[in-house]
Amino acid sequence: MNKQQLIEFETDIANCFNEAKIKAPIHLYSNNEDQLIEIFKDVKKDDWIFCTWRSHYQCLLKGVPPVELKQDILAGKSITLCYAKYRIYSSAIVTGNIPIANGVALDIKRKKENNHVWCFVGDMTSETGAFFENWKYAVSHDLPITFVIEDNNKSVCTETRKVWNCNSLYFEKENRKIIYYHYDSKYPHAGAGQRIQF
Image (tube, helix red, strand yellow):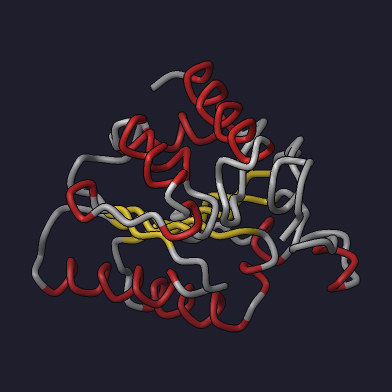
């Protein structure tokens, strides 16, 4: 899946939402295609992907067929997309994916397997205690996990740095088991700019 295909898919979903074809919350990506494509160059078929409520691009890059993915989004599953066949788990609960991802990484280490866990979180989530404790455990036990912090400077309708009264986030500087990147999305936190905003 290339950059243009990702953009076209997300644009189609945005249009479906604005045309009231999707009757549940959606969270869209934009302007971070290059970063995700680069990350997924290191993601193997047997690796696990753990996402938040914003996971369309990860699903596509891991191999979920676009037709199947769109059907599930239209059915209202956009924020809880899970595909055992492709080893993808999404959670609509803030920090909900993190301890599960850590547990899978621990299981991989105990079984001495060679696959890896990739856990995607937003910038506000990365500032929570739940994230810090799981990251610390992963580092201390050298678990096969990489946390990907996707910083769009949004948490629902607030700006993360204003909430914490800081110029930079903790994990902008700390890089053990962390990939951090910043992007500016053209979409609001939820929805596609028209109709109801969740």
